[in-house]
Length: 464
Length: 84
Image (cartoon, rainbow over all chains, first blue to last red; front, side, top):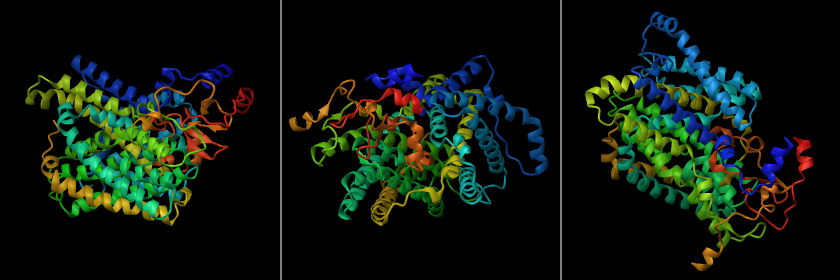
């Protein structure tokens, strides 16, 4: 123990392995790509991982469901053991309590299975039982009304699950889509991010708030929610009280928007690709946005007459959010740190801004997302459409999609279970006003760009 | 332009003077998650974007572990080991 602390504290450059093994982002990459690799090996051997990547099929009566569960019960158990083994490995490497995690994850898995099963009921859409929203609502109810012991928090790793899901999502998206759609996503997201940031920043300044708090709030609303706020808080040396204010406001609005955007998109009868783009532009955090996008995508082709596919909602959302917004967080941090040094007053710490933070703060899971997309694009390349639909998709893509849905469900449920409104810091009226003005501008501009300017592109986005 | 470039540091601060080696600095992800209530709802103390940022208990700031300042106080390893 002594040697480890000595080594860590005295070394100016931590071991590269420590970085790879101590961050959830890298673990999402290792696990996600590992799953893709194993799936490919099975596929090459003429088999598939579909046995363990179990998912409930559509059911209409309880006897259907009972038959399904009795047939697949052992598969669900095997899946639980596999997830538990892999995730416990991650938890032990990043330094959390394994014992608490194991109990908590079993709880999460059982609830997720129930949600997944309810979502597979053939009448679920009719009663608005979209699994992402159901997971979130159930989590919110349990954490805010019933209450849970604190030690259960060990398994509610929203970010880890969502990052793993996004890497697996990469494996189901063609890389050509990222190449062609990336620039449009970056253009749309950049316009909205810059306008939203400036709106929140200058409103906050006008209301007399500190520049650093204004910057932390601005990036929270404009870039990628809590993650952006916390990254920029470190870059501009924010006051200790600033990040909790931004966290409270982002969580508050993110939860509202998860439910509101799919609802409004439904009223406007938006195609799934367009709604996904709007959610990607206007929702703050990856997990929150994915819950909204997946929920809306699930309505496609149903009795509501919403055009497009579920994959289109996820693809357009991910392009805008991950490629258009998330990957620029290091640049935002660097630029704001530079502004804080050259323009704002700063006397407490040294006056240099380190260029290396563009990489330190880069959300590394994006690398896994891109590599997974490249890998499956290469694997699928050369197959005819018929071969893809009859051989490649059921043996390789569908099981990965199923595991992705599990990871997303763990995350959506964890959002609800970790959102305890009573525990959130009071934001104060002025930060609330500044952030809310930014939210309104973001939503209007996001709608205009997604529907009016780039609507044709997003509604026709090709996902396979 | 030159003035801006003067403020950019292309290399890290010298070993022994970075905040991560300072007595006033705390960046354990678990402690950060407990300090910033709600952080785990839509982010994480173990996320890459957080890098090694942590709390300076002297200045009451949240800053980079690679930062440095005139109040640097070398980490007392013995007390750290005891407290852990």
